[in-house]
Length: 223
Image 1 (cartoon, one colour):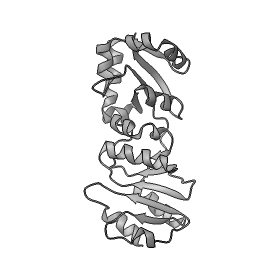
Image 2 (cartoon, rainbow, N blue to C red):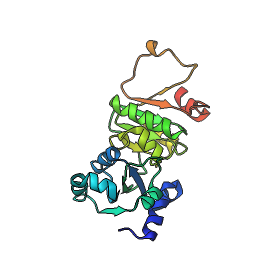
Image 3 (cartoon, rainbow, N blue to C red):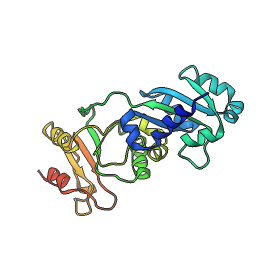
Image 4 (cartoon, one colour):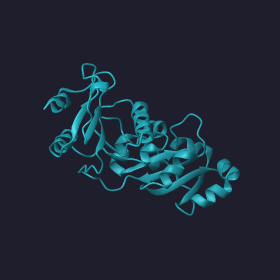
């Protein structure tokens, strides 16, 4: 059984400030938890309600082989949950070590500039994963990757692709350009995609929902 202090501590991870400070995040729901447990992220703890345990004892038993598992009261679980109707299972994971250098291994990189809505960010990541994009670079003003809404909207794709939000976004774009990558910028005034001749190495940039691409990324795309 988790102590009140432990419940209080883990509940702070619903706030980005504490996720960043503690280098941890919460994954809620059966499907997302399964995806996270099969990813590169290390589980610290799995928390279930008594009712969830009673209905899924075998499943919880398997999970307990991978991570420390605790049963808590419904009222305590709700303090850790970000959803209105929680399923009764969640996990706490470590973000791991920060990678300050983005080193693309493929010829197609998706770059996201100031995608501020968590739901939009998660949906973009999910769609990119579906189309086989494996490397995504995010600017520091994008929504937090580990925001519960991003995780839910991604439907687990956050755990399938290589994501980097720790680098200097524009410096990394510049470095990739020097290494032969061509920038494709989604812009209303751009060239018709059906007339465009694709380069071998491409960075596709999607920018803010309301304001579009910044002058910085426009400048890079025209150089």
